[in-house]
Amino acid sequence: MLPPHARLTQSSGFRAVYGRGRSYATDLIVLYVLPRPGGDRVRFGFSAGKKLGGAVVRNRAKRLMREAARALLPRISGSYDFVVIARKPVTDAAYADVVKDLRKLLERAGVFTGAGEN
Image (cartoon, rainbow, N blue to C red):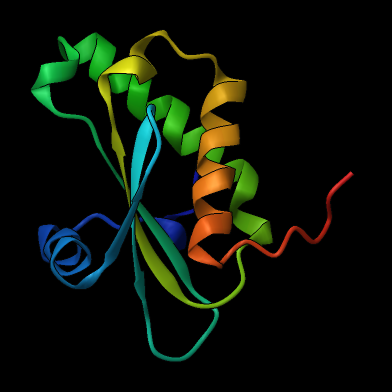
């Protein structure tokens, strides 16, 4: 589970990231990135639309994305707000695929340090 300080929960925060952030996409997920001034604070928000399926399917997709973000959180440098959006293929994806895609998007956005890799 993501620590409380790493969660983006308010709709105003989501709107800011959507409106002023930059987006990156793969087949499984879309990542919006908004740099924040000062500090070393990273916050993640997650979204899964109703086109994905019922509540069980959407919640599973968000759990996968949340765990992927938690695993990669220590390797993100800087202060950013992120919104991760599930796409339809994520409903059939494995955890490793979601981690790989999120890492790829973070690298593309230039915020992934890769420090601490094995």
